[in-house]
Image (tube, rainbow, N blue to C red; front, side):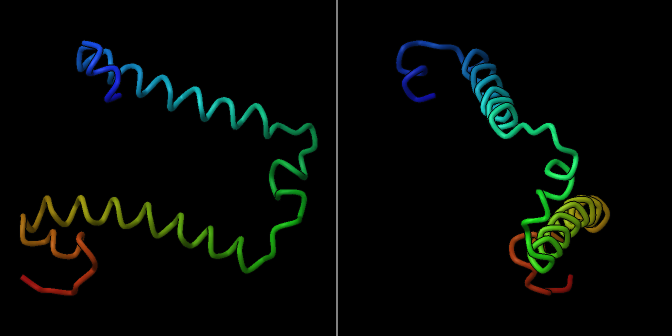
Amino acid sequence: MAIGEQMGMSAKAIGVAFVAFTIFIYALIGYLSRTAQADAYYVAGRQVPTVFNGMATAADWMSGASFVAMAGGIYFKGYGYMALLVGWTGVTY
């Protein structure tokens, strides 16, 4: 992006290139990781230990719940609520 900017690319073109590059990388990873076996697709061939699978599921759920809860909290309680967003400090306003 920095090279593109120095070459005179517009901010819009850099933004489009960044999004296109990101989509390309994800598509490439998906293509290289493809499988024809349903077991390998849904449960990673049963090679991931249960504890790690549980941790990944919990992190995914907490991430989504935190995102929605923080956005709602900041919307309803204002700027001071961002203290929780910065590091779950527990400061009450």
